Length: 520
Ligand code: C2O
Image 1 (cartoon, rainbow, N blue to C red):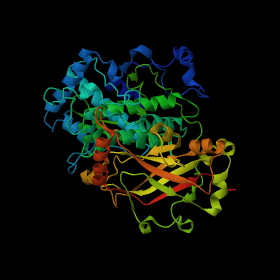
Image 2 (cartoon, rainbow, N blue to C red):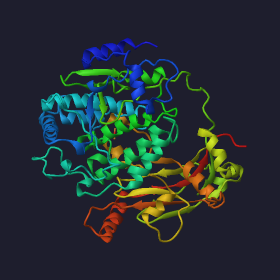
Image 3 (cartoon, rainbow, N blue to C red):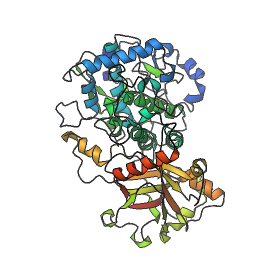
Image 4 (cartoon, protein in one colour):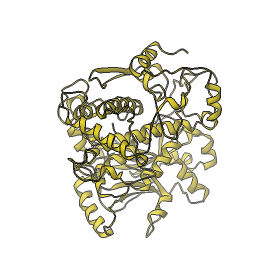
C-alpha cells in the first residue's frame, strides 16, 4: 500500500515537516520494542517515528512559567477576536457545538457515539493548537494535557486566580473550581476497563467505553449542574476542555501501544471520511481521517510516549456480525425480559443506593453460569454485559452514579465497594438540558432516554473463581457518589448532593445482564 496522494499533499502544504520513511525504521523498532510487538506482518504504509523532530504535548503540571504565560496569552487573544473570525474562541467552540441554531456549516460537528470520536477530536485539537500558537505568537507552544488519573483535581492554573479578567483559563461555570477530586472509580477503574478492551468498537469496545467514562463522566463531574463542560453544545467554551481532550487523544495512543491486536478501523469508508475546520489563517481546511489518524503525520507526540505504529488490518473485518447478546438476568419479570421499554415504568435514582435483584432467564441461565475459564477463551463471544436501560435525566447530576454487581449489603468503605464496581453512568450528551442546547444541525428525534452498557466479564470471573457467583442470585446496585471539596464535612457534601440529585431527576427503567456469543 502506498501513501495516498492526498496525504502527501497535505503533509507538504500544511505541515511543512519532512517525514521520510526508510532507514531509521529498524532502529526505531528496536528502541521501542515493547510497544511495536507484535510487528505487522507486512510493511505498513505509515512513516516511522521521526523522533525528536516532533513537537511534544506535555502534562500541564510540568509547564514552566513562560509556557503557561504563553498558553494564557493565546487563549486571551482568541477570546478577544470577534465571533465572526473563525480563529476566535467562540467560533472554535461552536465547531464542537452551539446552543443556538447553527449559522455556519462548520458548526455542530462533534462526533459523539460514533467510531470517529477519537479521529474527529484529534483533528479538531490539531487545528485549534495551530491557531493557539499563532494567537500566542509562540512557535514553540503546544497544548498541554490534563492527566486526571494521576492528578484528579482541576489544574491549579485553571482555578487561580479565580478571575476571568486576570486569568483567561478560569471559567466560573465549572464545579471543579472547588478543588474536589474526581472519583477513582471513574479516572482509574473506568480507564482500566477501557484500556483493557482489545476491540475498538462494539457494545463495550475501547472507543465507546472510554468515550462514556472516563471521557463523558469527567465532563459532567468537572462542569457539574449548569457547567459549560457538562453539555456538548457548551463544553468547548471552557478552556479545560482542550486539556481534557489532549489527554483523551493521548490515551488513544496509550491504548494502541499496548498491542495485543489493538487497532483502529482501517476500512476505506472510515479513513475517507472528511471533516472541515479552520486554520491559523482563518481559512477553511478539509482533511480526511487517513490524514490525521497518525499523530506523527501531524508532527506531534506526547511527552514520554512514543506514537503508536498504526497497524492496518490485513484482512477486512468479517462481514458477519456476531450473534447479538442475549438477556440472562433482568430486573423485569423473567417472562417480560424483552418487553418494549415504553411499557416499563421509570424508577427514580436519587441519593440512596438503588438495589435490584435480577430474575434469571431460564433459557440463557447456562450461558451465564459458564465457568470463567471457558469464558476467558471465548474472547468477544464470552462476555458478560451489564446494561442499565432507559436512563433519563433533566440535567447533569452532580453525583456520579456507579454501577456495582453483587455488592454486599450493609456498611462498607468506598474502597471495599470498589471490588464490585462495574462502571459509571455517563450523562454527557444525554441529558434533556444537553439535547435542548443543540442547534438544528443535531435534531435528535425521540426522547432523551439512553442505555448504559458495561463490560462485567472480569468481575464475574473474579466472583466465580472466589465461589461467590450464583446465576440465580444476581444483584445490581446503583450507588450515587458525591464528590466534595477539601475542608467540607461529609454531611455538607451529602446535603448538597441530595438536593442536586433531586434537581437532576435521574430515572432508569430496567437493569439486565446479557451474555454474548452462541448459546449451547
Ligand atoms: Cu466532543 Cu469531550 O467532547
